[in-house]
Length: 480
Image (cartoon, rainbow, N blue to C red):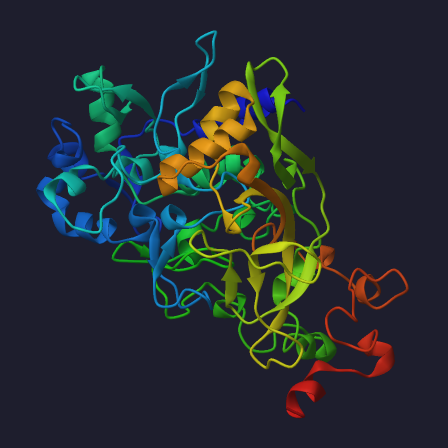
């Protein structure tokens, strides 16, 4: 399916929420939304602040706004706050140099509005210092108004801001502001499906189909479970994170876990229950991902290719569907590649963007299912430091070297000549936690314990297939 059709499909799915004057509150009770009487005129975030300043301060300090946090989940964080704004990644690199824009091609077609499209703010970058201007920069409606849409506009002073598309229609804008509610799945999917530059490009396990999933596609969301039931919020700080390349809102290891709902001996078969000490639930219950929308499995920023019929360029991207996961031990922590440190090449020659920690000898580790993503990213050859890419330059011109030089200038403030730009191959392990299959479609014994095993047992630390060699992980752990 052409990418333009995928975007059109997502737009139709994610904008399908009807206008409503009331919302469900409590168990099966339909009550009038109190904002219908309380909000009589919408004047931006300051309208929300009249009643919700305390909540706004919570949002201000959250990961959804700050885009960085304390990171005990990262073994090499060294006590620093880490996140999108001061690190890099193998998709669109660093968002701080591609923050907000009205980027068009030569024909005037909009190419990009910048990475702040999915930031819970109105266009100003977050500051760690609380101020009235920062509170009024919050965009409450992006999460709380199901019929809300926004666009980048130029203000009278020439700066750019995100503004509601309904702002010029006072009646429609009032309707949007009065119908605020707890975030729905569609609210979350607006950003989390489209991250990485395309539908399902980044995650691999969050697709357009999740807007209206069946139980066969995702047994949890297809049963009506809402994102916020697993990813619980405390003072606008969300639990969860998986293999995050930054800090977490609730760093005391408060990730959602299967065991939170599926307690004790969940299988009738004792052998399967015994597996749970070494194998995480999703390893068996997510046999594949990208089952509808193809996902980005390799991205090469050293190349730029025209996108047919769209008047823009993008890096070389390899998309795949129905992908089998990779498997590795993980104890909940990992290491990432940092922008302020020289890269470290592994034995395979690649630089690990995120590498899960854990091994067969680690009693806190279990075997997890991962999306294994590879890439090619720029470095400054003279110091082996990674350089973020000014992605808008690639989109508009296809000149990747110019984009790298602009990235070095705008992030580090230094000029890097062409001769000092090199390229590294990267790899990244990304945890898979959605698209859980019903038990009838989970992996069976022969999927792992046969001649055609999807497991590389020796790479996992076993002598061979543990069913044949007797190399059970529990014996390894006990012998430490």
